[in-house]
Length: 310
Image (cartoon, rainbow, N blue to C red):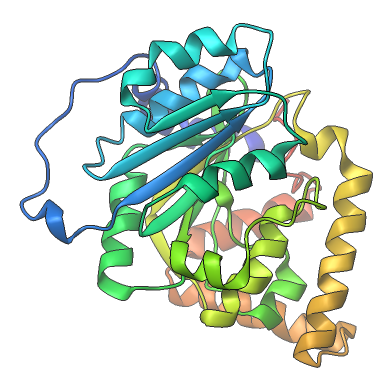
């Protein structure tokens, strides 16, 4: 019953998302002072993701962001992905299809070509929700924060949204406890800081985002933009599903390093203190309904946001 209620509440957001990625939309009027906005570079790494790739590209292009640099790095796909990329190549700053050493290598190829003030990546099976880039860019313009990030919708392969995940600002200490705390599907960060602290760790197969946050947060906590949403797509081929053992191993390694650098003992008391602070931050943000739903879903044993509702 609870899952059905939550899924029903997302009916409108689902309709909005499906219309948004159904086709390429004509540009609308730009903001009054676009020159004040940062240039944004988005990297999309892809390999044999033809069934999802076009909707991802549409979710980026349909943002109608005036200073967008979209770079697609394909790993030599043989499933028709290249045809999809060519369909939109006049709107791409750069694209290539060639063999690489995996997602992290593909990302770094893109980031080394990026020229934006802020950069980010969108996986070839995930999406930006309407308005996300403008909301993130305006926050970046106001704050100059090292990372600006939003919240997350979780959807299935048919773009049906059935869950929402909300976030609070992170420090390196809280990152060691909360872990999955900044969604790359709705995050941008300063390119100059990436050049200072280093690009993606190519040894990481899954937790490359967590490892990157652990370095970028040395420049200060992220700014959460509540109205900016990314969309994480759950399907049978999702890396979280197929590489869970690697995910856990990499996460433990990163957390151990963070605890050592931050002088944290990593005890349960320390962890509970951080979790309590996070709950208070949610309350200050006005996330009362979210906290209530999260408590109820955990209580009835349906808090696994990777699992589609029955």
